[in-house]
Amino acid sequence: MSRLEVVELRKSYGSVCVVDGVSFTVASGEIFGLLGPNGAGKTTTMSMIAGLLEADSGEVRFDDRPIKSFTKQDRRFLGIAPQDLAIYPELSARENLEFFGKLYGLCGMELKKRCGEVLDQIGLSEHADRDSGHFSGGMKRRLNFGVALIHRPQLLILDEPTVGVDPQSRSYLLDCVRHEASRGMAVIYASHYMEEVSAICDRVAIMDHGRRVAMGSLSELLGQMQQELALRVRRLSDNARERLGNLIESNGSPSGEESRLVLHRSAGAAKTDGLISELRRVLEILDSEETELVSVETSQSSLERLFLELTGHSLRD
Image 1 (cartoon, one colour):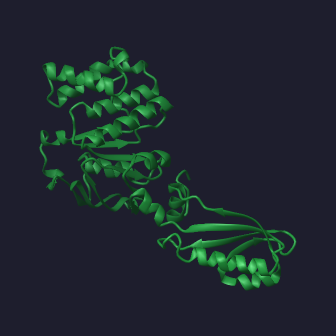
Image 2 (cartoon, one colour):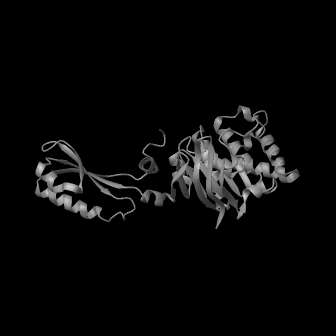
Image 3 (spheres, helix red, strand yellow):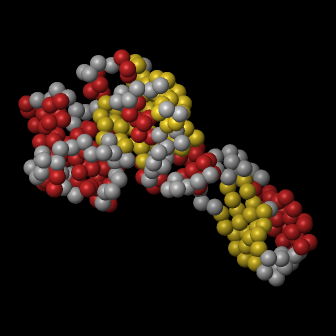
């Protein structure tokens, strides 16, 4: 059952639409990814979900209640780790957690115990009493994450949580996210790092220029991709090219030089449909025309390729 429902959110600044009709749901225990380049609308979308920014239209509901109707006390269900660090550098890690814990109503032994639990979880127990301003970038990110967890939220919003961190801190953070989801927390994980989204998210919405251009599990999204099979051949005659016709796309020099023949499977078709029978036909023609087959290559499905197919540009453009 969905805990969070985001319905047709829109936001514009003047004539510029930065979020254009974005909708999705997030269930308990689910890590939902928002993938897109800087400027895609991810942060604006999350700010509207958190109630930090008013939408022009659309609605956000949690447990079937409109978030805009929530009181300050009600909003304790939400934990946010923003891209811009929300910690006080003049305070120690423990003092930061105590400060934010008190804001959420924790006190006494409950607060002390919870701070200890979070420090252990984010791997900062040995540095608990050091000023956080002297932390490395990765340690600051881990503390930023801990602040979002201190009050045991039911929905966790993470905006680029691993930007600029070292491999150890990245591993800590990803393990922490998985742990919280395993305990039933609903998580929104926004990033432009495809490898992280692929590794950690149960479902993904791909955003570009404020729009949601695709959504689904990783396997569902990659299943939408056009599959490619490429054959490298030598001595491809003009007659062979003519016989192959619409079965292939080709490039390279005519007979005597190496050519590359490409067969495509349309997006959404079963992996074996069409492509295998076309390959057999192509191989029969090549054999009858005495064309030498050098190699056969298959394309690798990835979110990077899918993003390029959907938007016409790479994620890092």
